[in-house]
Length: 501
Length: 65
Image 1 (cartoon, rainbow over the protein chains, first blue to last red):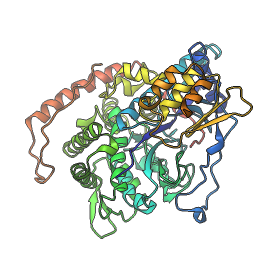
Image 2: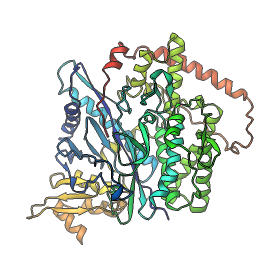
Image 3: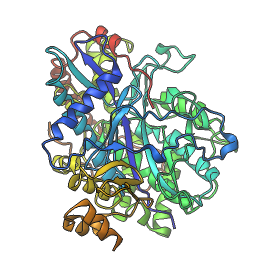
Image 4: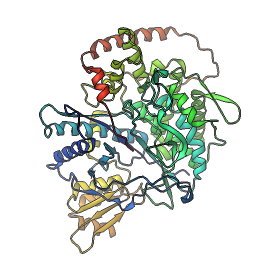
């Protein structure tokens, strides 16, 4: 039985300080986040003073085993702003970007809600920063993955897997999904940033990220990016679990795209856990295929497979959908949430049908289609070439988070969340993972929690030593299990005593 | 802008019959989509960055991840 596909999204946002040409992105990102944390101080249990606990960070561990570790271990930056929020998220400066790592969620719909809550938090941060910045300056953040000049920043997904699932099986099945799901997960981009490709060779492509992928499998996330990232850092009981850290996706503005990105991948990985997929569809040349799929707006390109046959990305997605429908009838969809799993299957089919008939039908659902339709319409109206600066500007402005400026918001893309639930998710944790315990402890006892990370909380309750509460089971610490205890506890000390009882 | 109404289609058999006939509906919705796009294009001119070239040039991000 597949382990529950607990999942979440981490997004690095692009950041610009308008009115200050030489602004340092690290200090701007810090100011942005600190400004937001400042607005929480009056709020009960905001937790801005709680630091991140780096005890269990080991991004250099490789899922293929120690001998294969060829790359330098990624750096863990411990000195920058690093906050834990009452909704269970981590909000911090990563390299030169503000990053929002959403809390662990039980299904794709919940993870979408927290991804959207992240946007609201960034928006609130921008507003808060205005009161700190000099007159005439404004911090603006963009939910995209590239500056159009060869610099990329990530939107990573995380999925819980069974430790017993062989890594090779994950690689075999996930690679082809990551290459072909681009037809609905892509956020669209004008031009190309791939080494050796002229910008004008590619007027428009499906994804922001494909240009930056150079390897099939590897540990890197910043250079020679691999389709399958081998970072083996489960943030959970390593005897029982893996975490698949997926770096091959775009940040989406369209909720349907985010939902399908998470939903189809969680389903595929549940099938991988259960070894329910049979022989994998193997691409003859995955990295090349990733670039090709992204550049094929017609969706008609046949990709060579290693058995000598060929198939389009759309045909491969139909095969994966058929396998998932079969899996639903033989195994059920418990691992991804039954109701949400059914919603994923239905939407997956609708989107593939739409892409097959006429992609433009999906201009209200998928980012790349929305962009293509908008840019092409603008181009025709004004008689522009694809490499016109006005289109490049629109390509960035699509991802602007300010509601008045965001072209994505202006397009009126279909919603799967509503404003009230997103607003609640800004402060409240998801109820059915350990994020609930993390978030609620921060809300109720912010002064007693001295540090937090994904798999533990450290309390100072005045006793000689600090007390670490391990949370190695991502599915424990839920509202059902500890909600009453946390509500009833009169202090952190009392809570710890009740937990031991 | 109002939310787009979710299209509910009966789940057809998938793609066994490759020949898709032109549905009269498609051109109808095509016209509607075109009208919506025109309206949108009229509207967004007001919010587009005024100096596109400078804006694009100054949008530089240091690496991440």
